[in-house]
Length: 251
Length: 258
Image (cartoon, rainbow over all chains, first blue to last red; front, side):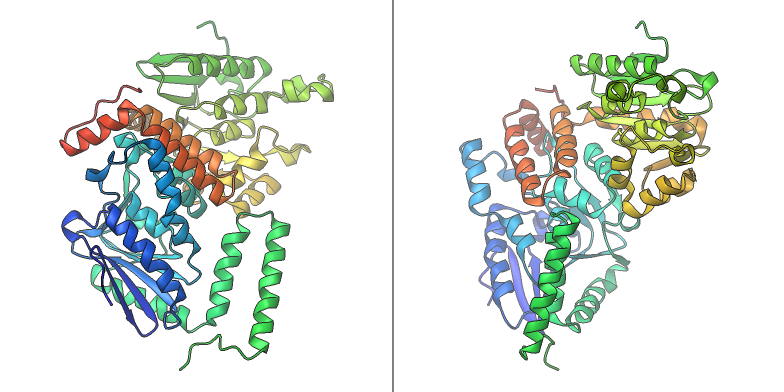
């Protein structure tokens, strides 16, 4: 199954695992990894055997140190870089996955690393995790959606302080500001992520996906429009369940 | 600087704006609001300024605006002559990062001024609140809009509707301030944050502020486009080339704002 070079894709009991697998480069996101993620995400979403995804990093050091800086400036021009960005919109695709995604974060989650985790629905971290958007320190801004996703997840006041200073924070502070949902010991990270996955898998699967959709679409709408989306999805769900669709996982 | 109600101090790349009517709680009257507008214009035109710190002299940060003055103003002119909105919009319009060094109570227009800053730190003695409804008015310097965007709807509605103040510990808990320090440490702590901001690439810092603030007024896909476009524009700066070079050579980057 695994024809990938920079990621590992595995499936077990309804869970798809995506492991960022460049441990010697602290799982930095290079062009190859972006292409492979771009390929694997729709496969995960389309696979009827998969109900939920867990994203993690290989190796001891961390989840991901961010974009691979050695590849910076390799695009022939800014115009071409811009064109490529939207031809294969990886981050848009990440946020468009209809199934729930859990990020299991250990060690460093910087730049595109934490930004990737912020494209997921649930973030669980080990107590040694460090989070940061250090881009302004190298003359950049976050470019994997971080300047947009972070203020939508945490108190905007905290978010702007973190982005403008480029400082890193620990797991406890990250949990305090709402960036992550749970902090556990390193040894317990995968069992905590799997426990969360199993909990979500015990719910109605279509309901879980529609709930995700209602929240994400609703945040971009006026309250009135958001309530309408919620009502439509509810009606759709009810008619599907009524028609005998199996929205619960088979025991 | 010929200001009467504020102190404008430029120390290298940092401008300290101190509200300076300590005997009357640094309340913002029209004169102070206009001086803040003028000071912010001067800051915008000065390319050397990289960070602004807003603070108050004396025991409080700012206890509100001078409502007595407004009684004689016709309703049509209120928009142009409201010290609360004049002062907070002036600060919110700055494109460099702004730190609120909240040295004591920040109430009404004082809290609104702090909400217009990017990073808020306060001394332990500070209280925060919108007393407006107890006077039969509502916050008019952006408080009803900026507070929910900072602490969320639940806490903002409680604070604005009840008009009950909260203390520094609660302000930290709800995300209104990012740090609480002893009063004598406030200046030092603000300087430390300002120093950190100055060490970053100035254009990137301004664009990051723009991406976060403007992006929150857009849908997520629109915001992502803004972020990407600003980032492609940054790729054309000398600072970005220097930043990557310095990273690869494992040395500290020397940014010039170019």
